Image (cartoon, rainbow, N blue to C red):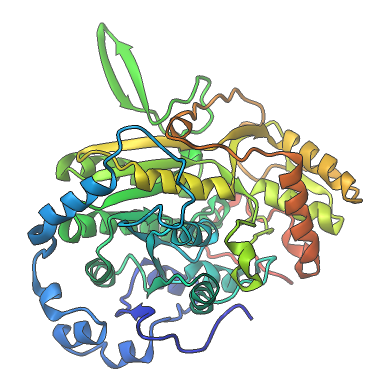
Length: 497
């Protein structure tokens, strides 16, 4: 299976008391018992005094009791940040050097997920000191719904062990829920990050629209988790740079150009630069809108350093690091709830299932390769915002309509001997199927991003990987099963029958 049951070394894993969090409450509400992934020692100390629990967790009682120990060391931390980020002009010539990230400590929330795992390995391989924080809820969603990753992913404990075995570099692991503030604050105090990369949210629009309980879970988990992160930075790591993964879906599909985060408006003779209007089209997208608003307020009020990355649709599975050993393979989702458009099309083509285009297929979005996601995060880490400022970047490299994606997969598949077909299915989403779309996305390239564009070789590589694992595909999971207008108050399960 995908879980690893061997006990990791104590130096590798920090398992801290697991509270009743949004994840626990919401999964219980839909009839699923959340599995506590912490070590047995945490169970034994659940009712112990705070000082005893802190000691077992490897965090001093003094650290728990202090209102904030970080302020004492804030001047030293500020000096460290200033030293690391001394360059005024972007110079990416050494971005892939084994010591490119020397001096930076990056905490990756959601580091067991699709984007998080690839990013953790990318940064670790370049000399950044990396810690992964995750409660494995993404794996639990698969168990709830009867889904599976196309690729046979290993458990997170085995993943970090294999990475150290292959690369000689250690990734620290903190197993717990960021909605549990006691856990999160202890993790911050133990690791003392210079930057926090926040992937740790429920990231599927269809999942958020399945029913009331999953809508509530999505917003509670995502919004509360981000607020906790902001407080943890304020209290325990005030110089830490928060890099939050948002989504291009926050903008919707306006009939004007989409700017990078801010827009200058003239109104009744006055001018101001304001956050670009948000039009989230699911409870998931709206949770990201709330995150952005909360972050901006915290940034201004507490003089935080923050970057909001509005990411497009990510595709691909292989990165140089995940290809170093089969046990490091990333997850690849093909179901209609968690699978992204291009990845789903590639898998459908490989197994002989027609590519399912929703509606007319004119829906246009920004896309980027998983390798570029990693590069963008690295650029954000190397270019922190000044205190009190929230930078906003549109993180994608190209834009395509759904029909254009299907045509690209058809062409690439034919060269591999496949015979991809296309069918139009009723659109389960409430969205415009033909619309204007022109989103700006120059800021990351100005900072040195060299895009890995969607060329033939990339699509062929993706298709080759998919063909390798095609026997794992359950075709009953391909067709859409979540309809926006039919979202119900009663819990619904979409699973194999």
